[in-house]
Image (tube, rainbow over all chains, first blue to last red; front, side):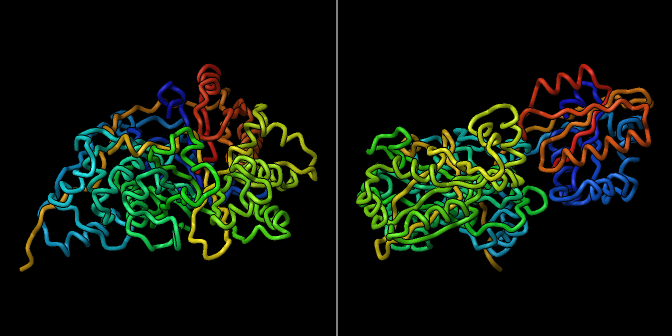
Length: 436
Length: 96
């Protein structure tokens, strides 16, 4: 669209699965008649002959020859609609028209404003009570969210976050954590075709103040604060970013159950290592919430037993090379690693980095590594450039040590661990205290 | 009859949509420089090669040039400046 604004006529080519999305993005960007053409989905894994057939075939949306659409898109004169552009305001009211509880529950589902489970209706009284959980003004802007990088940001204030926190069933004392999650700028409802979820981890005194679980069943539905804070992050992501609607603002092909709720606390008092937020520069007495983008693959194991290295190498190799894991350990496992000499999380992360190995040809034979990392490698950006230089059968490390996050939690009923897709980027740990 | 209640709207605030005009179209592609912008999605390079071959076989007077941004999903001002300075039109693909 920037090229069009600079006077260069353009035609964009998409696969037909993304037709509604492409049109929706063009509309929201004020260029609804931008020339879009379509070929069948998928492009990935298709041979040159297959793709030549796409080029010589029909646009599956217009049912006209694809190349004719392209040529005409660049050379047919503009019409009145093109020349008018489209400028308009979109308003969101503070309150809805009065209605019965049953009708409002149905309306929220119909409008895709929920996770399709019943919600607590955000009455004025309930929202006012939620707002007592923070000292911040209801009209203070908290941040901006969008479902994916190429969509427009929506803005929201403290009151809008409170509305979604009420809907999730959260208590006012959880509200600073929910505000910090909203302020992180990380959506829990990414539109990515990868069906990502965002997992959140709470550290510091707030865990105990609001009764979060870091024991038995920590990653399951066994604690009110864990469950409703995680749900609130998802509901606010849906509603404050402009939606999470399949085939429009959500394109995850398989979906992800972590999108219901995935929030947990670190068992700092039973961990032999530094708490996660302290690793990120916070003090132990600070309260903070960290977000991890992923929630896709999960590996699991026990131990560390005699063959722990073999097991861990297999698990690491089975992780996706594009998203490093959060390595979640029960305290029994963490103490076992200390006995093996891993007296810091950093030492264990270093071992994981050194042993998360793939043959180079497998590492590069991945659609997201090809899309996101290969261009960086070609541009000489490390560590991708070195990985690209490796011989096809040469082993390359999938992750740098700092890519791997280590968290201790769990009820000590078993020495269990999990590796879950979870990218933690700079700035993904946010102060909760700032939102009290 | 069930009681009616008033509740909050849960949605955030969308930005104002500001209409933008499309660039004037070309009268003909004959002799014009058309950039094929590979958006770097996996296999889009192969797709663009097929578009290039189609032009060579069907509209050989169109001057096709291939170009890529430095990184996926990130604006590349340098690449954009090249297309603006040296191109008459552009085909972008394959985006999701």
